[in-house]
Image (cartoon, rainbow, N blue to C red; front, side, top):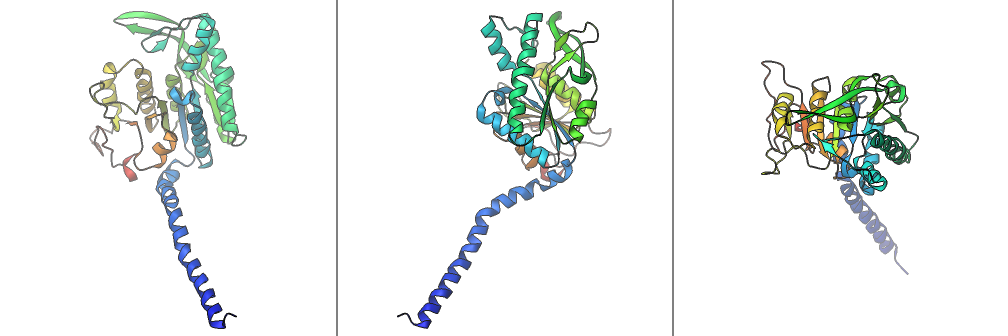
Length: 340
């Protein structure tokens, strides 16, 4: 038989072992708590603010990236932000044009859009890409509502012309956004929904439907909504300081600094950076180009100290000076954590 003292010793030993394991369990969970606390200043500052996200690049065709994007957007919604998604569909449009034997041509970074091509663009954006994205978001609850720039006169466009080597180029049914009616989008946001918008618009001049570059559409919508932030997902890490000689990414730059760089940018980056420039010069507090190939890059950009990608900010008021430094990997110190 065990003596009482032996039994008591065993009991105290079990208690001591249990007590000793509790700090260990708490310690393993501590990094999660630290991550949440790191996000607190941004959760506080962005609460109730509108964030317009342009969805594109590899994130549109990679299944894991698409799922992660949907999780990020739903997280923003549940964290108290008001996300709006604007999407293009370049890879899907190219694939459908190839199946139909229609050729794709790009001038000045924009797709030349014939009437036949426009029918394909409209079908793919509204009938394929948008529906898939709405479905991914709605796996997490009845949140997403799809619409196009045609709906409720959300976007009105006029024909856009390009200039290549001093020559004016007809791009066909490619449009520039000239007016935005935010009523339907605002109503959806006020109802707790996530608008998912295809970048096509109708012209009041000829009543044709126009293909609008998704970067341009997202920037125009962000400005019209008075958004806190425009986020543009792309297939690069950000804006390179001296491409192709260097892969260093510019962490932050002002609108004027970006304007000086625009003439030397690769054609594919021009609509993205023009969109960022338009946004911050029309009331949007920051515009960010981030790497959509990185899972959860949206959350990393908004809710962490380091951030990712390139951030464009408005020019400081005359005489105010800069609060930080521009250049690869050199954040400002205007906000906690170094990124506004």
